[in-house]
Image (cartoon, rainbow, N blue to C red):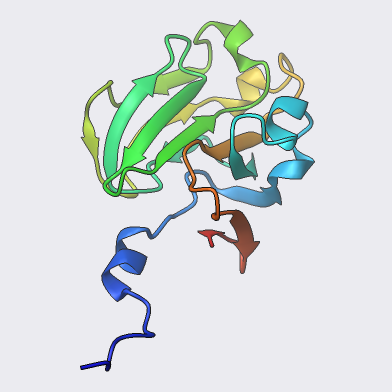
Length: 155
């Protein structure tokens, strides 16, 4: 009767699996050189200093919004968790230059599916940083983001 009382729900753990959306060095959100992100004004998260311009979906879910300038994309996973991926800093000023989107608002996506190609070589001299914040905008009050073994986890 009490066999599973203190065990974690394995199906929820699997459903919440999160992969990195870009290749590169994983950083704590506090290291992003912009206080809007580093002070968690939009939510907790992490960041990637990218080495490759292929942005993939970190989760199974749906595209909520691709900003018109394509510098940011917001997703919702199948558990209702909202994720904002903001490619670089001040990239909104590029007005879409260097970004090619492969998805559209409302589209269902699979984990690992290509969302966007970014030409970091073309844009990095035009913006303060290409460090890419990944923000969880609707975490529960008792949840926080931790980096462990080069993975982003929510605890």
